[in-house]
View 1 (cartoon, protein in one colour):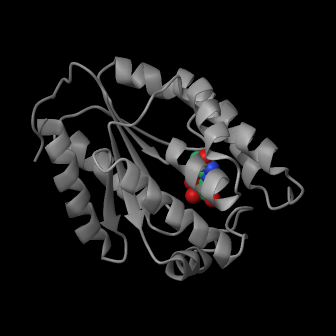
View 2 (spheres, protein in one colour):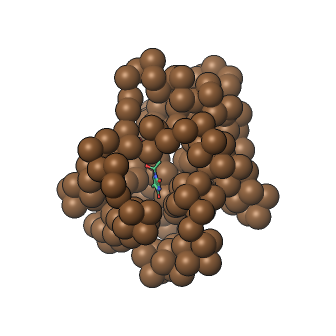
Length: 215
Ligand code: TMP
């Protein structure tokens, strides 16, 4: 059922986070469709990506040919893609009062490059401040799933990229990183179990998002 246009005074910024194979992209799409049907304007996007320049950087980051990439180069490239993404897409959409839904944002850098690669969290935070100017999602949904199940799901759909090729230990560290982040910011980051069916996960996400919209 379509209701009239809902105009927000100020945009809302929502990110979906999690390890590989949690179904973030599907849930981001379903959430965007749900909100559009309710009359909200949404901008659905992803990191690294969302703009032509950031998509080019994504290709460099995820190509399995680039197995010599230095961890620091990797960190800087994720941040470079983010700067462009914010400037060109996220900030303008928020300024127009849209609900921006991004598949990954800064928390992925803390989890993958910080907890996964072992780069100093302090350094990551300093770079993040430069890249985002302190911009934080209003709400982050963390889809949490057992690492083996996640990697297996992606294998089934033949999704392979440079970071997915890392071993199970790496992905376990990343998962722990996300959980630690949630403990640090329980108000912003809400955990949803990704082992349930797609529709159940969607319903839970909608319930959380509705609470934020009411607030
Ligand atoms: P995905 O969006 O298809 O999951 O692919 C993005 C990959 O990049 C995924 O393995 C997570 C990784 N990543 C980082 O390592 N750091 C980041 O800051 C972001 C946004 C993604």
